[in-house]
Image (cartoon, helix red, strand yellow):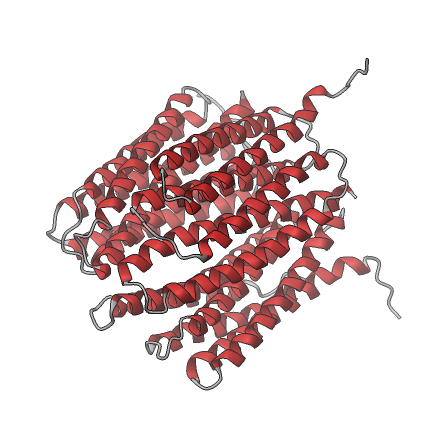
Length: 205
Length: 205
Length: 205
């Protein structure tokens, strides 16, 4: 039997992993919502539950942070990491909600590409969180997220050019753009998560 | 006569109270602006003066923070609290200004509900600030603000559904949505104030 | 020959100066883009290169910050200063990119005023950065930036009133407003740079 001297410390890693795994669930719900016109309200409902779960994970981290004297890395970095993981979820949930709220029947095809970028970013983030414990093999993670975010940017700009290309009326442009903007904000928030991880890793090295 | 050993420390509480009381003034001006089509330019002018007063309170807090070695709670929390109180005012002032600037004649009825949420949140915040001194009875404040913010969210989403429902032309949607977005941002900023107060209270407990 | 005891410390000032000088280049590209309908894609391309250069300066500062135990002023202030210089560039680049992406042929005349405010703010910022070293004559800089930002605000509001005045169709309003919003965000980011410099100077005084 192995005694652990700092049992409470460790669980930050578990909490970050919970929060990131929840993003994988959310991103997959988005893929489902976009690809399948079937039961949008049902999916948006699940997304809402997913976002509430995310709030719980975030609050648990913040509570722990406020109660701890000793933290495994800088308090400000823990705060930033938890906040930006939470931001990703908020943007994804908002996108799903707006699709239902605005009764959007059809989304431009590139939105599928946008959502696939989010799904991949969520998986990479979830795989990286446990590696924070040993600070190992993290650089491949943040390099790949930065690459994905650039790819997402290009998809986003193609989408804007299409939206404003004259095919859609102004009201439809307005609705679609808001959905697309939330998805783009989610991709940016994944990059912020990766930047924070990079910052933590550099300090520890 | 009672001597106070740390006379300069105390006034952070007074400055936060000043800033929050100013938000009550601002929220009431918004109620006036929305409910009464009468003298909109005059009310927007008063709102501008109110926002300038808020800037003064914020600068006073920041100046004090920069000059102090000892603070009643974490520097970063003081910074966050002052900034988010200031944000509320900025969003409320922007909403009032846009109503006048865009010459909006009629606002959807739910905007009244939105503004009433802000008024109530301002009153609760102003009542809570003096209680920071003793760190007493603050949890009821942040719980109520969170409840109000959820209520505000629902009003906001009903409003969006109405705006995009087909009744309004695109240009009108664009104008109204900007006003409504500023009011929603003000409600979110009140929640950020409450979250900061919660964070301060948890650390002190 | 003069020995410098803390050679590595000094280069923060150089890095901030590099970042701010890069903003002057960016602002001048914007002026060129707006005033000359000629080779917009070419100018937007140069702007993209300028933004990449800015990213490098920002990363260099962040890397140094993460590796340093001792910093010439508060870590959080260095972080804020670098981030807000980076934000200015991002907003300017986005504005240029949108002009090309949305194939905007003609911009309202006031956009020239908006861009001139940015150019002047960039020049003032670049001149101020080397003065951080001695903390001298900085107040005239931040006072002038605040004045410029107020002037920019007035131009921005006149622009909005014009956009929504009925002359433009909704889709055009939507496109133009996004460009104008990015430029306004750049002006706000310059003010944030100045506020951070003020905050640093007050602490050091």
